[in-house]
Length: 627
Image (tube, rainbow, N blue to C red; front, top):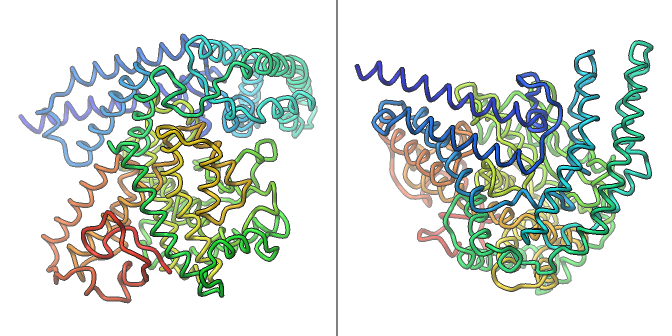
């Protein structure tokens, strides 16, 4: 009887999980396109609804889904599931509960335009995902174009409601947005026009003419109206307070929820801030050691200025910078087998391309978008402000964004047919909606990316002092984020103080540092998750290493971390604990601590250290830095 109950309830769970994910892509075609799942949609509407009513409808749908699953499955039923299905249940129900909890308290979707996101960036990107090879696809694309003026009108209403409720981003978050849109209007929204004109045959002539007319008239006029609203009504009335604490009616609770949403921990702003200060101090000691190696004894500031300004560290061209990244990833790929099982590594390819010019001036130095059945993953390289780009940062960025970082993690997740669909696909857009949305699991995803950067020593990278400093600078950046994000949003820091702190403690150029500070103000809490997540991966690896001794294999550890897909950090810890227990029960463990593990195999012993982490209770058992 127990087995029958399990099968019956399990089928209900699986049906509900699939129904919720199907509802998400059916009601949100832009999400479906970003995940390369347009063909799986059952709805024909071609553009996301962005009205107030649509957000209220989504909340009602999620509440109903939560009621259904709670009424259908009891805790006793869950006990009959195997470990993977239990985990899927826990993740699914926590996603629904958090969506209801956060969206009922906050209305972050009212802050839907900023220098990083909004219709001026999202719609051109969406258009690139839409194929126009068949009559059906071309009709869908035309319906998308017709929907743009409607969406802009809906976004305008959201922004007006935000003004009414006192919920807006700080004014600096919209710096440059009007210029972006005015350029689109001046160019007759050619970002959409260019795609249409790739077809030249007679059979599509009428379609092309219709689309061009919509773009040059209806869409261009709609964007002109939208930017006029921004300039005359919205931007002049934005808040001048930069902090989340002071800037929102529920600011203190909102920022706490943002931190919890992104880090998947309950760390307070003060705890995160102190962690950042401690990490920056530790990393700075390692930086001073590298500076001495390169002839800058007791002159770290001078060394960082040399790295920022010497022309030999600047790429010659955008094409040369992309070629450099291709060379790096080509060198990294064969070395991955030192740390990953062949079966773990994904089969999906990735490409390296320049960041689209339309938003490059406001984009980070590099970022990654996951691929799917109809396109590869994409590692975007920002080639704007080229003299400010630094070649010594490339090794860290390649490891973080491509392999074994985001591309490896995302592709393993998507290729894992043993996971339900909602665990295989993780949305990576509309950060302004956090925490009122389905989760990103930023701590896991970005923690893995930052952890991947530090694998460079094991993979044969970071051989020169400048490359070592590049890695340390990138890690210092993530540690500075803990200090600066919490400083500005919760502890009264000014943007200028944050900028100065970034410049004093990293080798970043001023342009990139300003971009970073603006990002933290625009997405409260998001940037803190990198270091919090990375520390978790390090702590779990160190614990597995010390617990298993000679039986520890980093390839097994990485397989455990990746095959589960994105999860809250506490669940990741439970999975690693289960792996350790299972390994102990099947292998004769020789025992011993990290210190007496084989130096040729040990992740920890291949490194030298500037200091032990403040959080460590065992020497060398947490975040460790190559000198």
